Image 1 (cartoon, rainbow, N blue to C red):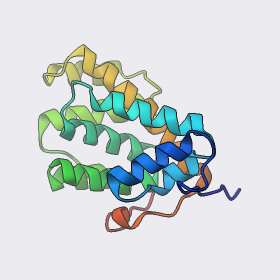
Image 2: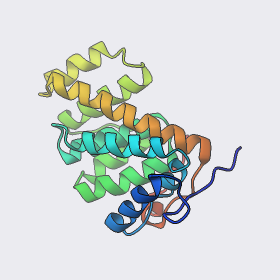
Image 3: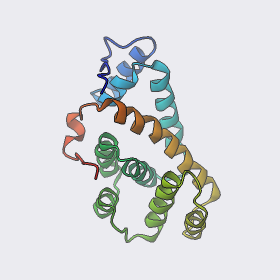
Image 4: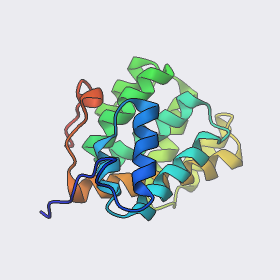
Length: 182
């Protein structure tokens, strides 16, 4: 496997330097995934921009984290599952829902179950998720939110695939939620 350079705010090329500095100022650390993405400043910019846009979606912060965690589990991204478990906990997602997503179990909350199911179907069926979309809409979601799940799947594809290629070390902030793909 290729060893990708893990950039810091000091070593990052181009506008990735400013992006890593801003991230460090905001979070107190730089996710190692960002340090890898900094090898292509446009990838880092694209990921952060899409992340900001998804954060403005009509899905609640808890629903957003369910989607991001479900995509990461479907794509078997160990880094992103640990990171989004941590973020889901911080957003107040029920621990039973988080555990069900991580383990492939059932979710008791019908709305969150429909959200996780449509997300997983969109990923695994490359968008061909007609029945799951119908169930999602019947659970009280809107058509707009189906499209927002697609946005999240695209966002996570950027990070999940980056992590698959580069295997960044897990930040200490996410270590307590480490996860192993099956």
